[in-house]
Length: 197
Ligand SMILES: [Zn+2]
Image (tube, rainbow, N blue to C red; front, top):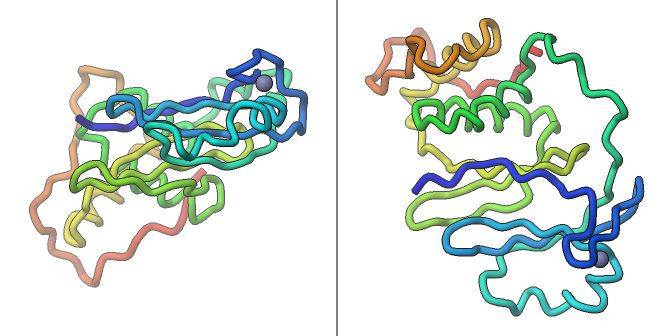
């Protein structure tokens, strides 16, 4: 099973239901529930009274403390060109394994730009799974490591560049998955460091 999804930060405590105020601290807990990573955002008071022992509970994976930021009043312009982050969200919603390498590379690029942070690295069998957080919205992205070989990198980077330039094609349209054969290149492949947004 491929475990990659987005879990948004909740706007209220998932224990007592109290809404988070802007700039309020909160706790995030991750639990493994039948191979699904389940996120719980908890207010400080519920943490103190009910969740201090969370680390000892069944399925506990991770815990951290964050600061809630109220979302902006108006949503961003929907017709703006794809940025690396909006593309990452679209690819994850598409949930097509053909885009897993591109999704992973995008997350690495965003992390280097400090637009995403690695909160946790997990193992599911032989597979590594990275839990990234978007620090502003608190959204969590869980993305499996596709174990890319060096000779695949250049093709995947080309695919990412193409997606950033032209956007994600509608479902059902022809797509160009990264071929996994070796490519002839003039030099050693390098990880992408630029986000063209
Ligand atoms: Zn609470």
